[in-house]
Length: 336
Image (tube, one colour):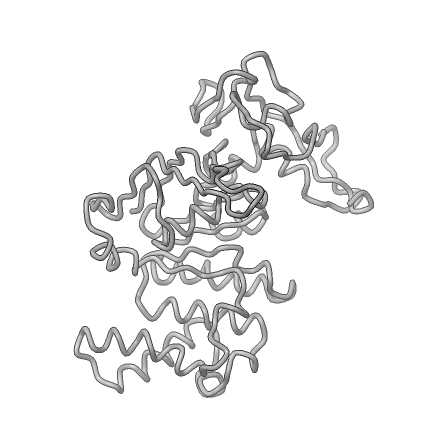
């Protein structure tokens, strides 16, 4: 299990105009991802979900808070000694075109991490070759036709499968998929999602899916947890189906309202929720981070910031003073 408590990350702007200005990427985020489980982080671009994923994968540091992998606190050990723990958490990046070295064949790409493991465990060269072929087969690729190729000779979907195969070479306990299908042809996306779901079921590997698409989050982990992130804060958290079917935070409701649907498929009597204004990060917010954009804001929202809580009539955690279930629908395609 991997847990995080109060994770804070702040960046300082660079450049002549904004130099020194601080950007709060994460504002005290808590999370928990069980062994073999699934979790999804959703939110609009810039909400902090990718930063959080990179922190979980050990690719980014955090300013405050605590991450515990298994029963080991990462703050309690030196940076170099953290590597074996974070090596079990592998990142699958959004862009399969830049994730692979264009000058190396797929054989060379897989050979590097496998050679390192072989040197540490005393395994033979034959094992390296067998394991390279094995991980390619696990992701649905034919080793005989793929190993000798360069990345540019593969389609986007095949490249992403190679990226996943490379992650499997270290026998990971968790895969962090950051928008893993957003740059792949639409016709191939379901295959990648099905692969991630199959690896979770077959290998017992945990999957953290980072996305802005609610449908893909549900497909990967319909039995997992959904974290809705807004401006570095988790504003709603709970079982995937509960959050999607009965959202109580206005921001979650606005995300669901933005999903396009065809005419005739809208839910009768439902009303979409739309923010009152566009996001402006330059304005300071002393209270709720969503207050200026929220059509349901109340007196407390402007001066007091709500924290995640569970109220008597709401099963999921939410950061809202006035939570209310609302039937929300996506806009018809003609309005998109």
